Length: 469
Image 1 (cartoon, rainbow, N blue to C red):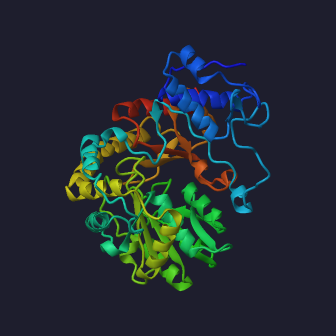
Image 2 (cartoon, rainbow, N blue to C red; image 1 turned 180 degrees about the vertical axis):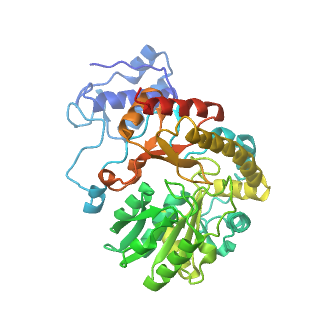
Image 3 (cartoon, one colour; image 1 turned 120 degrees about the vertical axis):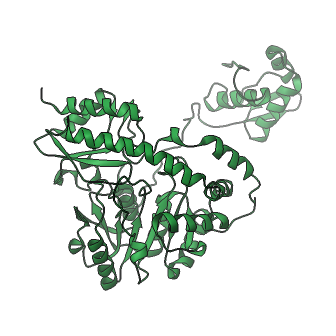
C-alpha cells in the first residue's frame, strides 16, 4: 500500500485525512478491493483521536470510495481506472460555429513595472478605508432575490450623478444596474440582435464589444474613424445597431464633433437603427467643455447609454449601468433576470452610499488632478523626445491617448524592445479587426495605472526603443 498522510496544511484534520485518502484512491495508489488501515491503527500512527479518522472514513464510505465488510475491515470500493486524470475529459463536445470563430482569448500580458496599457485606473488612489466602512454597513442588504434592474437607491443615485456630471436625461426608473459595461452591452445585444443582424462598430475600436456582438451571431462591420469620430457616411445601410465611444474614442481618443453626433442620430432615425453610446471614461477631462452626449441630444429614443464604475473607481468593481428608452426597458429587465437574476446587493448598497455621501465626487476631483498631471507629461514628451517619430492624436479626456507614427517605425519591434525594458503597452494594430490592413501605425498609451513619478522614465524608454541608434 502506497499511502502517506500528512496533517500539515489548511483545513481541519478530518478533512485532510479525507482528501488525502480520496486522492490516493483516484490516483491508483489505493486500488479496488485493497484494505485500508483500521481507524484505530491509523489514528495511532497519526497521533489523533480515533473519532477524527472514523469521521473521514464515514465520509469516504458515503461518497462511494470505501465500503465496510463486517468482521473483515474497510476496503476500497471505487472501481475507477488505476490512474484517473485530475481534470475534466476532453470529450466530443464542440462549441457552436459562432464561438469557435471567435478564437482563443488574447493572452494576458505579464506584469511590467511601467504599465502603459489602456483602460486601467490607478487602484492605489481608491479610498479603500471609506469603501470598507460602507461595505460593512451595507451587509444588511436583503438576502432575498432583488429587482433585476438593480438596488433602487443606487439607481436613483446614478441618475442624479450622470444628470449632473454628464447631462444624461434619466430618472431612477430609466437606469438598469449591470455587472460592468460589458454586461450592459451584452443585455442590449440579447434584446436587439438576431443571427445575421448587421452591427456597425468603430475601426479601430473596442475589441471585447466586437467579439460580444459576433458571439450573438451578428455580422460585425468595421466603420472608419476620423478626427470627428465615426464616419457616418461609411456605415452600412443594413446596420441595425451602431456601437460608438463618442466622448473619448477607443483607442484613438478623439471626441465626436457635435455635427457628427447630429448626423449619426439622423442616420439612426432614417435607418431605424439603435445606437449604443459607451461613455466609459469621460469623467476625466483636461480641457474644453464636454460635448453633449448622444443620449441627451436624442429625441427619437434611438440611444442606449452605457457607463461603468470600473474606470472611475476600481477595475475589480464590476458595476456598470445602462440608460435605455422606455420601450426597451421590460425586455432588458427580462434579459438581466435570465442572465443572472440581479447583481450583488451589498456592493450596490455600498456604492449608493458612496455616491450619496459625496465620496464619488470627492474621489473624482482628486484623481482628475493626478491624471491631468500625467496627461500633461505625455503631451510634453510627444512634443519633445518622441517628436521625431510620433505625433499625439488630440485628446482631452480619459486615461489614454494615441501616438501616430510620422515616419517609418517598426512598431512591433518597439513593443518587443519595451517589453524587454519592463514597459508594457499596446500597438494601435491590436484594436483593428484586420491588423494586416491597418492604415495607422502607432501606439496606444495608457497613463491610468502607472505612477506619475514613473511615467517620464517609461516615455524615455519608449524614445530609446524607437530610436534606430
